[in-house]
Image (cartoon, rainbow over all chains, first blue to last red; front, side, top):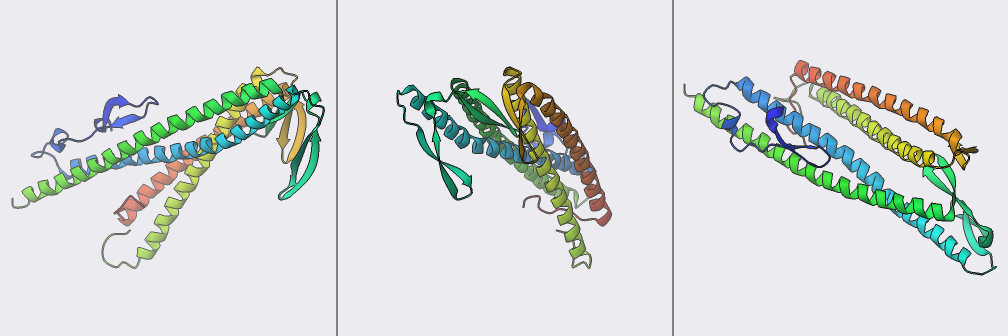
Length: 188
Length: 118
């Protein structure tokens, strides 16, 4: 497997695929057997499949992180709004609609003046109590982390796509090289 | 996908090939899903361990929301992570086995995959 790898890898340790510039550097045209060529082609295939597998996994991770961002943003805005209302010296309770069930809403009042804590879903079926300021802090960090993860995943996907192309071209080059080689052998 | 002239087995081979691909894809999806869950649990665990142990904390178990404290929820989450890690290991073994079966099947039937792309 090593002959299809370079020393390089991307920041997440995904190895870079080696571009086969000259097939002769891997196979000696005068001594190599059909099995040698098949072996190399097989190695190319395996490597290609590994990259594709990684690509699929990365894509899933990326979609997961992407879908989190709007949720965090909305929650953060809500907590910030509650905090603003609390700081205003307004005795009016906050009128709101809350979802009782799908398409069914009911009216509620929030006593913002005496509101100290909110409950946040942390994920993994866990909801924890947070003072307003702590909630804002947590959500802000979460948002930054999610955005960072999206950037990283997009970078990795881009890198993986390049490696996939390299390996596809490699396979084609070895294959065509082999055809020429076999033609050269035929008359003998 | 099978090689050669019209072959009475062609339909059967196609079906078997599809089955292999479907199994592999299903296993991969399952692993991805579990790994996502594990990651989520780990993030929650990180948050929960920094909170005071008596902080009010709810845990949804089978559709029921139960009031607990942060200190109580933590061990439950830890066991869940261990269980999910084991499950991922099992699924990875299963993928390897299926791959092996697929290779054996290709050898036995002489089927060659002409195009690896969908």
